Image 1 (cartoon, rainbow, N blue to C red):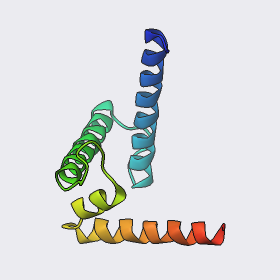
Image 2: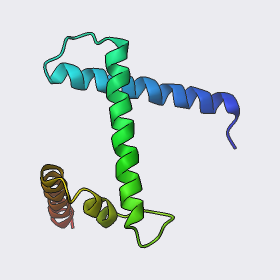
Image 3: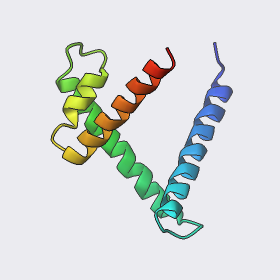
Image 4: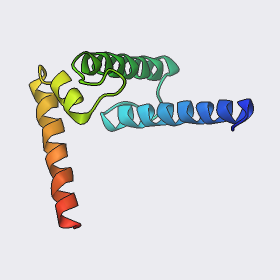
Length: 102
């Protein structure tokens, strides 16, 4: 069992890591090297909202309401052709890599 303090430290570390990733993503997309905290908060909020909506949509179509599968997520993004195509391509690449490693 973990104690409360280690859970808090782990949560803080994850938050810091997500903030760093969001900042690097903004910079990679042409933003300034240093980002405003409000900008990072907005990006993280948008990501959280998107993941929440995607998860809820996937759960609505899931065969098992206690978990979602790749197929459930794939169906949930089917109304967005760009995301659907990207996920499909990444999945195909993963399958090909696994076949090569056999």
